[in-house]
Image (cartoon, rainbow, N blue to C red; front, side, top):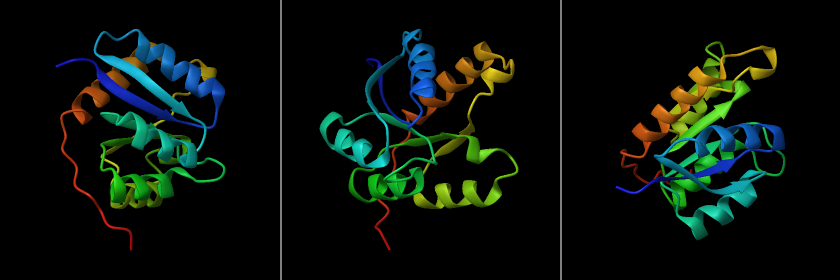
Length: 142
């Protein structure tokens, strides 16, 4: 199998740069596109056909929840929600994104607070490698 083709959908350019840097050091993963909101992300999904999508939840124009719903209805792809809004205490947010079709969630790294970027990088790579093996079914919009 070739590299896992990942699309990043995130409105923070700082976060996008961190994720891209983390993922580009992996020999298993290739970042094939970046979008700053769900609307841009949808355009890229149809053009790039990624193996896995990482999306934030809180974004302008189209948030990660609506983006996840649209992707799962039109181009089912494994989605990892990577957001500050999916901490262990954010049960409602986690429930909603999983119901919408996300396969997994991961809290954003708190690297600015002296977080361990290497363990975050390893966790992210493992999650993406697992997600790339998953087949997801379309979830019609209600």
